[in-house]
Length: 161
Image (cartoon, rainbow, N blue to C red; front, side, top):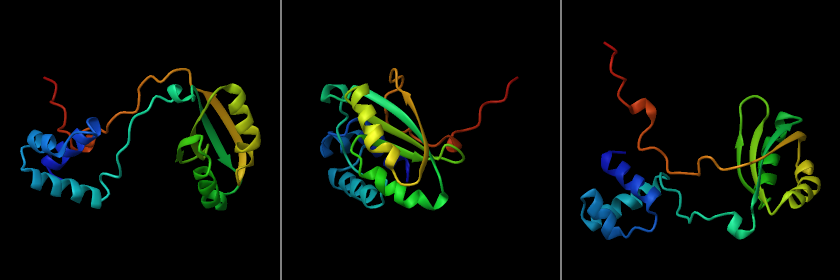
């Protein structure tokens, strides 16, 4: 990826509905060259999709919980991953090093609906040894675009004099 590709990605992250004409103008390419680069970024998997950023509370999901899951056995990972993908209220999940094994982001309407989900679904996920739930008080930093370049590519800090 070169500087122009990074500019394209940055603009698409912040302005997903930008027209190809406006995008090409901002990165100083012809529309056809810009379109070719966008298609190449999509084909390479750099751009994995496009979506709207939605207010969960406006859709009735005003309650968010972070669930830490510990598995009872290492061979349950594949089955556990597949089961997580089947629960619509699970909007994000990461496998972690060490314990706990997973961090799972869950949305629901309220505490009662989360409790029902916990008792009827989450504790029955395959291979679960334990779950620990933490209620999200406030979103301090909303999901945002990735930085322009990884920190390992940043120039070193200037030496102190």
